[in-house]
Picture (cartoon, rainbow, N blue to C red):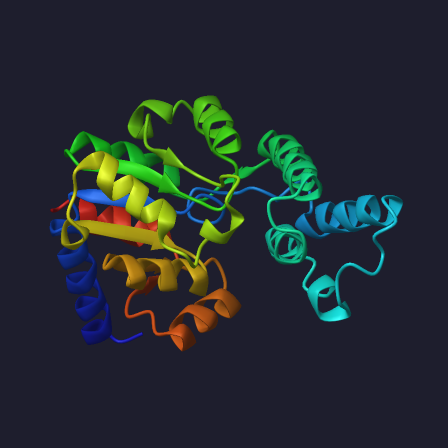
Length: 239
């Protein structure tokens, strides 16, 4: 990376920071690796096994089973049986697995000091996530970070069509905080986060913990992507 590129990226980060009066955080990724010690693939396998025990082996196509993403699996079942007891039970099982995962979640490097610093300089923070809000609350409370966000924790509801990339949780946060989209910045690590921010009219900063995630975000059109939240912390402190 050349010094000119470094300076350009630093200026971009400082511009994003300076106009962000409200910061909307995705949870799993930017704040922590929720499934660091409790594999998301294992959770998805467990949910598939449970569906099988209900006699629903054929409910999902092979393509819908393939990603082994618990949220994708939940959405797929909801498309087949919207607002059913089956979906309610499956969502509750996923929530319990997420709560188990929260106990062994790995904090994203620099996330804790970044959250505390941003709060100290006067920004208001919210979580806008596809995870259960109970899980988000449990993790933040365990890290002593809940006062930086509460009560603004906007996670999965019973309306699974509102999961990102639908911007519903972002709209809820902006409305509750009385904030204009132009005054907000979302930090996310997936193309669905980027799409939700676009649809809500919110500035977006991508966080990518590896090259693969960076490529996905850049291909989706993210203009600013950081590989470390330490870069954002450094940009915030002079601001």
